[in-house]
Image (tube, rainbow, N blue to C red; front, side, top):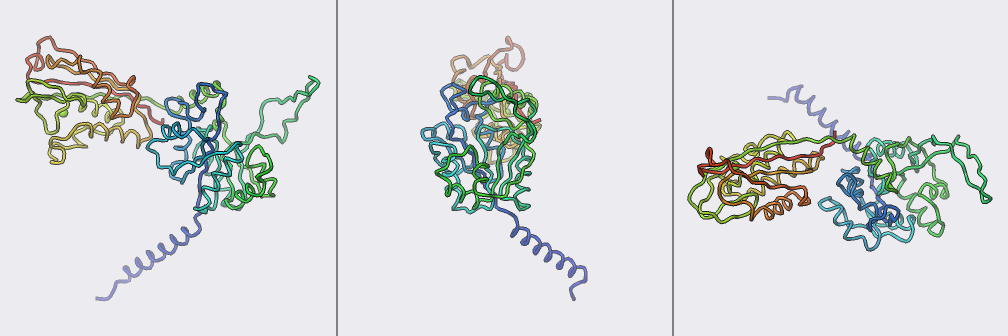
Length: 407
Ligand code: MG
């Protein structure tokens, strides 16, 4: 049978689509992100450079890196800040950091040299202390570069009246017209800005835009963002936290679980093995505490329940250690851009006694979830001899979890 005209048409179309895709890929620009995190940030105090301090519970640098998710990112850090950097970026896929120099200019140059081997078409250079930029701003900078600019700078007009203090103590009005605030990310044709940094390494400039001007590059301005503020002082931290609070919502989920006692010599509760005159019946390790908490976290993000994710009919989970279930729920929260803020487990049983194991349970849950122990609560109660827990037929657990999610 000969090929039908329809098939020929489809084949022709898919062939054309393949051609179009390779054509697009050929012209798709290669972009790299350079995050400058070399500053010492003494103005905020606290014994840590500001970019490693927590903003609404997350290191500033980590937020900044996450704002560029999906692009290759090179971070430049100050010498001696390796441990702070490792802690702030744990679990993020990043190459080793480049080491900064004595000035911002030197730090940027070191970062560009680290990127040179990848030969990107464009580089976006961004301050670590501006964690609140939106993807729309990066897109504007990239669009300007792809349209042919050597450099693209986000600028904002100045709203306040500006006054300059003179040496003799008098004041001069500075005309606001044609006055702008420069922000980052500042985007550049990679080879052009690398050459400018190499050629003018001996000249002191305040930012990469000044260097681009000196090198005679074609600079295009794009609208900046009021929320893309630079965090330098404590007031800025408060302002940024208020902005984030408006872009965040909190959700709470609850979970409940029960398991029946059986013959045995230990039980698992909240990830801790406790000697007991009975064991607990269950497909996995029957850790009712971790099961209730897993359901609470899944509930907070509307992701079903533990039975859907780990069916009791699945042989893979026979005798499984329940920390896997809890870690999976936590990874779903992280995948959705959220963070677990707090969790609270109540164990309901006459025996075993929970008190002696409470701190170990909190520590284990905190470890599985990557939380500070202060965010984990484990409580215990009895039902005064009533019901199945009162008759010691089994035990139960209930849990609540609070998660912070992008609104
Ligand atoms: Mg269970």
